[in-house]
Image (cartoon, rainbow, N blue to C red; front, top):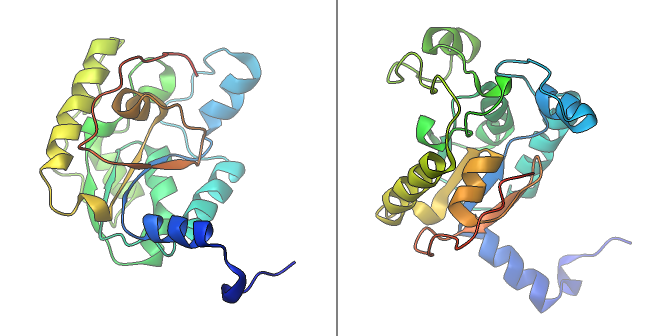
Length: 206
């Protein structure tokens, strides 16, 4: 049944108002790696994977669901799956875009091998990757402490920014976990306050 504006509950209205001015953490949509790893629990050897059709649909759904949210800035990880997830949101409104490897995934699988800045520039010509080192991802397994340190650094940076309530961050499972203590599914998001304390406990398995 269609619900028009006159029948929206006070709770729904308050929730909509909250989303219109808040910081959003969005996990990328389903990638080719996610699809195969979920089925087999084995690393399929796919470097810097693209989104699957389902992942692309998740990205488009997120853009539609967040259409009324006030956003002026996007911070996105340099992996292809996050850049593709960000694209429908970027297409829907003017945003200041920052490509930041600080919010990348924890390096643990083949999917966490990135793409060089030059190749990313050819793949995504509307973005600037010139500031990225080559490589911008680590060369070996990243310990938990390193991800937690990156999350702490990002939390401090964002709390100092006056526009954090108008920022969307397109990132990854492990980084969002280290930042918030919450495990997000592909294509889902949460509201986040960078002034909140670091999580007391982290469970490092999806």
